[in-house]
Length: 198
Image (cartoon, rainbow, N blue to C red; front, side):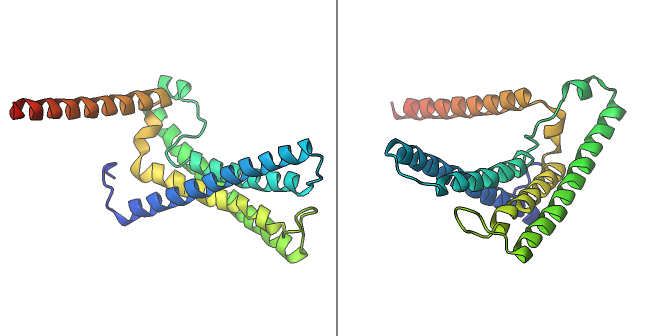
């Protein structure tokens, strides 16, 4: 598929999923930051705030699982490209296929067992010790992160498979070059506009 095709329904779906995961991840990070500050302040003032440790763990787990999924959205997860680049072209293609197969299988397993675990927590009525919230609220972060990872892998497979063939440094250099080119074009357009006015 064309990586510049931004108007397809599937591309819009992947874009919406990415916005949701970024919003959830940002919310978890902001909440985690505030809770840690409250915990520090309560210790400095010798106030017992037992709830903040469990709250920190809950939001950290949510942030971590959403981050796992987000890392696969543009193939930004950890991967070794040094070895793949040294292989002959047919072997490289096999590596790219294996990347998708193994990641999709991994996320399918995470989703399946994550939902089973969360449903088991809900059936058993597990509650947090300090917050007294149902533990399935914490456990459901695992399959949700798996869903985001599955969607992110599909996004890379359908729209951004070129990312697998380049290293992070090459991608950053291309993006920086595109930004610089855009800035130069804008500056030239401004200079031409000023020249016309004179």
